Image 1 (cartoon, rainbow, N blue to C red):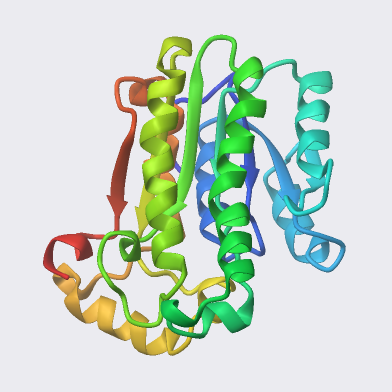
Image 2: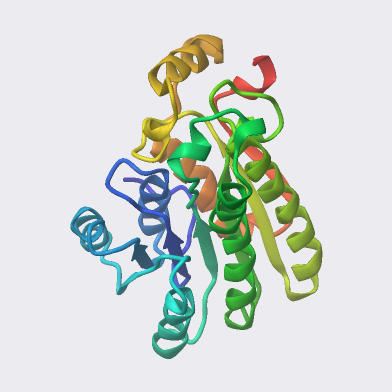
Length: 257
């Protein structure tokens, strides 16, 4: 792959790879193609066999488990980075979760417990990562998270994840203000619909995919590599004047939906 931006000498953490089809994988591939050194996490022992081959292909020097629901695991990742690298230049947060019963019901029927868990894993974990990353970003850096159009408009079957992603996008703006003095810029990438393992958990996902493709200019379905190219720019020095924004990596779907 041809590097479109130079990330040589930069080190980044990618959280959220589930397999080779993940949006986080496309981003990691572009980070690496641009010259970055990567740390990669996997959710648990069940996920490791799907993630480790991706990490090996990317020559990741640090590969660790990270379930943000397990006390101490996220902190352990940053401790390892501090010990081995002593710095962090960028971070990609690409995780989201809601209990199945709460995801597959209308928002009005979502339980308080399910809503709180979805918010904790999908949104508050980004704030936790920002706090842990800040002391390692001594020369500034980039924090990125993955969102979706359902944060701002009602998307059928997206349910509880709509308000959760809306909170995530609002958090990006507030974190950007909090961290501006440290030259840490913060972004949300609103990605087009991609057939990933996580997305397939939504009800009627294939119908959603067809609908999005039909309403996207030129009927172009974005790829994980195309999303990754934008993430690579945001991770680079070229992205340092941008912060606090939600950028659309959706081939124009948002403007005609």
